[in-house]
Image (cartoon, rainbow, N blue to C red; front, top):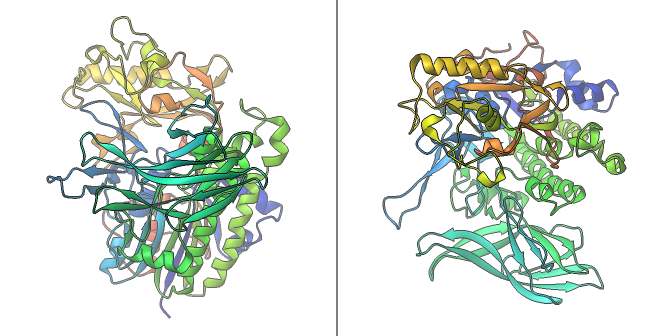
Length: 615
């Protein structure tokens, strides 16, 4: 019998919740796995972020070796925030397609399996866009954009003339009446001057008597009927680029309200897995095969529509219903692939635990600024209920395992509450490390992207979710620091932030500040933030800081639905690790998994890998 490895990734599953539920007998299949093999908490990465941790899982090395330090990186030429996971190279010819580049470095272990002739099936691992050519099949995960090139831009439609667009969304004001035409907005056509939106015309009819919307799409299906408070199935749409070319995408419609005025929401336009704008599977026709076998499925990296809930376009019930749709798709592809899995590696990541916890944590935390006591009883156990879904899934996975199977169940990091946001750039400004141009003051009027910063007098700046960069001469476009001056500034920032107390809550907000060279090694260390801020539980960097904003004040309450997080001191948010056989020790690191998998399948680990096999 040939050896098999099954890896089930449960993004963000929190060990304290898992352990408490097992103690109460609520996760019988997790408990079965613990009793027959091993369970431990799993040391995560600096920072404890999804793309960072899964990249270390894949390569067996720290972020300094694979180059993914955050969702966001900064361009040292412009100081502007940029997407860190992948990028697009512009073609030399206007008729050529842009090329997608995966910014993750290092050697993922499935490449070593391929070289050894061992097949792999890898579903939805973060930082796999574009997907690797392997012996087997791969469906890309976090990092895949929508058809507009964003990480998930939905569209809200309303007949209410007082409505306006909210953050990271498109807004369409509808005509009055019970029947009206409108359009779904597709990708920008950059081949015309000036660039213009591509559109798909639709016709909407509201039946207030039955509380339903009928939307004629001209796509597949040609029309959908949606009850108020429900989601449609996937609808394939065509967006015309020229007389001879159109792009295929797909959306779900959500009927928010029929009366007194019509309101509905359209998901981000996903790549059609059978005809994607850029490859999302390897081999390229695998997406078509999978869709034919299990039906259409989300291809967007961040498939769960947290943006709609954050903006109040979806309520919690609608968000959870959409998460259930995503989870059902992932279960179908898992069961389909496990049924034909005979040898090598099967690996799937379920992202939904992470998203549900991000958006619903406030209901389990009475101290959260956005805690709603009157609604808490409805959602305070939603996370536990979601965990039970994975226990049921695990029953099927255990059935697919035999004596020649190594089963690994893990989360990349844990979770905690997010009550207060820290404006790191304002702190740098107030302490003389970041200087604004004459007449400018911190505030929302500055916007994002470091508007109003005088770089000739700025020593440091914060961008992304965990890091602070020095304004170094020869590295940053207008750098001013070098030598002892740079070291002096870095030491002063480290000392000033370590142990920082939120004067309003009188709680310690920052545990410590780490230097890049203390925690990273490898080819990409020069791209890392110079300082990593280790926040205390309950605190996190502000959204404005992540995008180069400089708001008033140092701290503010987090009043968003996004109420749970994990970008804090990594020691406070370990992941989980279950194995179906005893391990050599119970203090595993996420970097240990790649060598463990290779060792079990009889393939030597690469010399770059820092982790060690657990057997």
